[in-house]
Every structure is written in C-alpha cells, then in structure tokens.
Image (cartoon, rainbow, N blue to C red; front, side):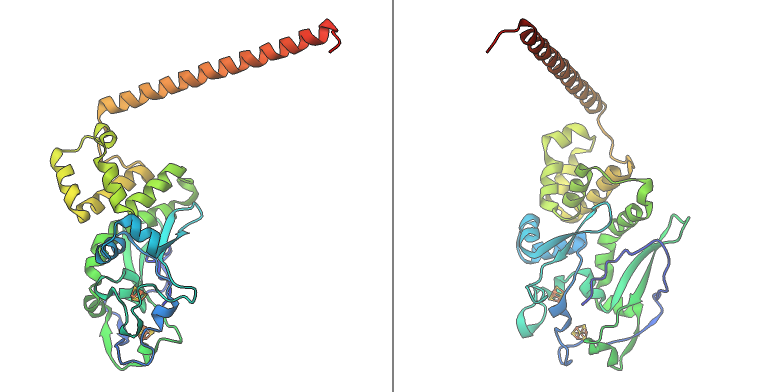
Length: 302
Ligand code: SF4
Ligand code: SF4
C-alpha cells in the first residue's frame, strides 16, 4: 500500500472527481488479500491518531511511541508520522490472515486505497479543493475485479466522510504552509514542536491547554475548558485553530491584555538581565586584560 499523503501540491494534477468511475473490489477471498498491508507506508492525520489510540486503549503519547515513526513533510521540517512496520514492511496492525486488526478504526490512507485524496489549491485561489488520484500497484488484484462504482459510492462504503470531516482543516493548514514556501519562512523550532503536539499528541495538548499558564494567557470561556477536558473531537477542532495562530498569526484566540503586558514586562526584565550580564562580562574581560597588561609591565620573573 503506497503512502498517499492527502495533500500534495497547489498545482492541479490530472485528477479524478466524485462522479468518476472506479473499477475495483477488495475482499477477503481475493488472492492478494493483505498484500498491501505487508508493504505499508501509511501517513497519519490527526483524527487517525485519535481513532487508533482509542482503539488500542493507549494515550496518544504511548501510541506515537509504540506504533509510529516520524518523518518530515516538507523542507522546513514540518513533522509528520507514519504507521510503524516490522523490518519486512508489514504494518504492525495486521492481525495475521484475519486482516487488519483495527479495521473499523483504520487510517484514512487505508480507507481510500487504491485512491489518494489530494487537497489542492489552484495558484492565486484561496479555496482548497479535493480531488482523487488512482494508485495502481502490480501486487493489487482488486483492479481486475468486475465491480465498477463511482468515487462517491466508494467513499461512502469506506466511511471516508467522517475522517475527512475531522481532518479537513488540518489538510488545509498543511497545504497552506507548504504552498507558502519561503514566503513564510522556516517556522521556529518551538512552532514545529507545537505543531507536532497539537496535531498528533492530543493528550499532551490537552494538558497544555488546561495548564495555568495557558489559562492566564488566553481569554476563553470556562465552559470551553470543561468541554475539551472530556471531548477529544472538540479539542482536535481547537488544535487546528491554535495551529493557524501559531503558524500564520491568524489571531482568533484572544490573549488577555494583562498576559501580553506581563509577557512584555517579563521579556524586558530578561533583556535587562541579559544586558547587565553582558556589561559585567565585558567589564570582567577588560579587568583581566588590564591585569594581564600590568603583570607584563611589572617585569616580575615568575
Ligand atoms: S492499518 Fe490495517 S489496513 Fe492499514 S496498513 Fe495496517 S493492517 Fe493494513
Ligand atoms: S485487492 Fe489490493 S487493497 Fe485489497 S487486499 Fe489485495 S492488495 Fe490489498
């Protein structure tokens, strides 16, 4: 199964649409059953992680550690994660001959296969559009089956809508980041770390949002905190909003005025401390030079 990163490029490739026909059928009696999971290269989106960590009864941090590998999604080091495989390329979720061990919670890429979802934006357009491309691999015999259906019907069969609805905003912000290229520049390391946490490590992100520091920084209503404490999906939706603020400066989460002033004051205090330390360092260096000069001048034999 190929890695089908569902956000490829702002340039429109030749692509299929919802009403395009697909000749394909995958079923447990097919000769190649599971062949795709034995060469798995599966990129995960945030809602995929949520579903899998719940399914495996792990925290997001445990799931990421045990079942994923990191990779860079672009030249700026935007972090992505893929499902871990064994040394032969077999997905760790494959349950022997029985097939996928997490089938009802399988990731978006597995659902779409042999299609790849492409989130695209035409040059000079603000609107992202979804298209599909067909992946034909020689080991996959599903293409030789007689069944023909529309991409709409295939998406319904695979329950893609639910996953796309929960991941869509994230695809769009990743596309925006990739399309912006050098215009936005490489995000600072801290932004990349926040991107990783808010995108994938939802349980750590929850602790971050519920922390005193966060509450002291942003003006959010009390019921927001109650909601995100219990509701993973609401937290995920907020994480996309937060990432837009971090990556693109789209300020939709109001900061408390005092928090801003406090940060400025703290920053000024840090600058002042650094300035004082620099003055002291230079003064000490001057003293050393002076002492060394005096020692040279005094002509004492050591
Ligand atoms: S998650 Fe399931 S369907 Fe996807 S590659 Fe792994 S075993 Fe196959
Ligand atoms: S038909 Fe294709 S998708 Fe289905 S099991 Fe075979 S290789 Fe995998």
